[in-house]
Length: 379
Ligand SMILES: [Zn+2]
Image (cartoon, rainbow, N blue to C red; front, top):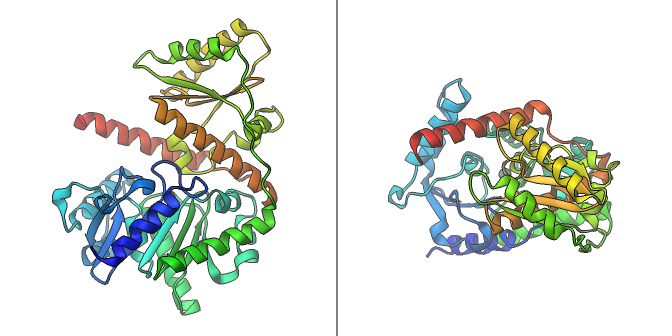
């Protein structure tokens, strides 16, 4: 096996195992030579990835995506691109699906590209001072990209910015920050990738100061009745897992004055995992009253969104997560915790800047269409 692939596996697992950088299937890594690009295929986790998790792509075929004209219709266009990405596979028989972020990886002219949703970087990227503080803290070491809809549109925006950066600075941007999304780091060795990440985090830590210890809090005994009751409510179309958790960080955002800071999504990934809104409720030591209110809230949510809620902030009780299975519940707890940490870090940069309603709607309609097309294909 090529040493580059070994290094790619090592750096992928290194960041994949740290919740500060990657949660569940998030993040993306790649390695390239002149001719080929190896990139994490959909459905693999960086934490446990090995050679089988990387799709090998032909870079000359990938380059065609940059210049080709695609449909004006968003979904049709993304479909056309997906097909072109599939066509670029050197070993199509493996059935791997390269991510929509493949073109971005191919664009960045470094052997290794490590894309993560670093919580600390996102504390800045999801804040009100994302652009100006990036410039102030990092100068031209970091290329900052304002939010745009994910997929081809975002790729074109980044491509333009990278070309401009190259022309002006006479070098390749080693770090790209994406507002309300995350970070791309590129370097020719994995030692350099780590050094760059370490430097970024050190600079941010200097602003954030020491993060308060996050202590687990006991949940009320009444949870033994409430959790199964809610599980019954939501298990109409298949068994669900419901979990109630609390820790000092969540407890802070459970307070009605603080909840608005975490009530809207920060990133597209956040929406994919936890939906675009949480339910917020008060628990006033009356189990029956609470369960009636939850039932009503869930019904309203389903009516409005056409799907079940995944997260309920219940002040006085804790955070309830609703998932398909235990592992999914675990991931949701991580996602909500990450979301609250981003909100906390953003306080250092003028407060939270969540996604706008329009940006959220784009992700939601995209999700719905993808879901529909899956159903219609019987997949
Ligand atoms: Zn991403």
